[in-house]
Length: 83
Image (tube, rainbow, N blue to C red; front, side):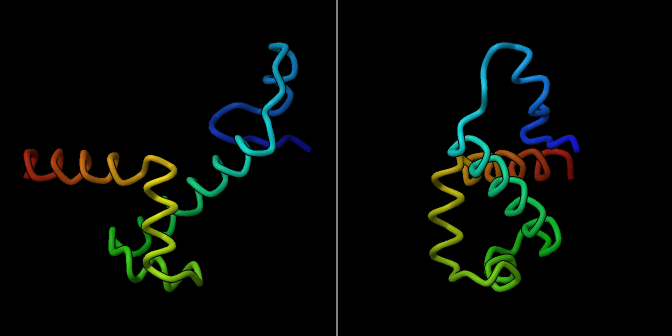
């Protein structure tokens, strides 16, 4: 079975001589799940939080910790320019 997180498989990271830490893997997984929930909720954080079963404040803090708030602001700005 091949596990892939953050675009790098476990096998690739081992062959490169480094092994991902549990913290890195958990963060990559959380980032992926939150991004999917936000996409499904059309960017609405309250709906995404409800779908994930967490409070909106918890989702906001996780997004902040994972650097997703900055990315979301950049995506919004890019959409405004393109629109």
